[in-house]
Length: 182
Image (cartoon, rainbow, N blue to C red; front, side):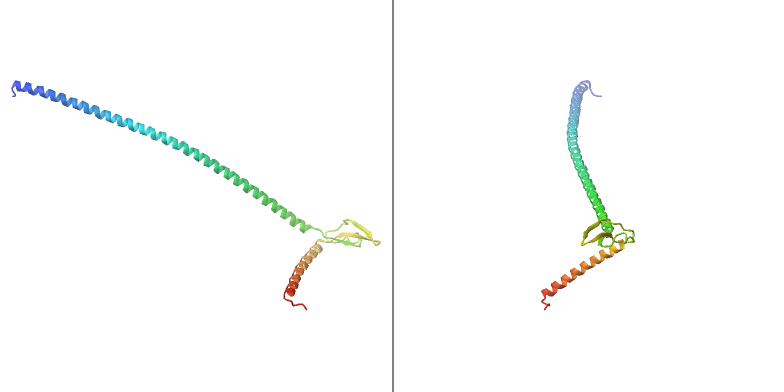
């Protein structure tokens, strides 16, 4: 065994060493705990800053999205109104063309005649006296409505005569330009 004075001496130093190690352990543990707490505080602070920044960015983003959505809806509404207006105008124009076509098909051709309409009653779908003319030279003139078939025949003939007149005018122009007439 160890002699008592030496054991007493080892015990004293052992307790001091143990107390020193315990103090170092406590200081080291306190420092580690403090460092960990400071790190957590720093991370919490950074997270709070990041969340505040993210909330700010999201708020701005939402405002921009709402603005763009409002612009889109306004443009869409404007486009729909323009399209509807154009469709209405086209519809009205189509109806006008259809009316004009129907009117031109249904136009009645009236001719001046010396005969009384009561004599010329059988003209297709029926005719009626439109108006009596004035007496010129002792004879009366009457307006009579032609039958639809006769009216169309006259209209077709008039169109063909106009086409032929245009062809003749072109031919006459050609003859005059080339000095073929003597």
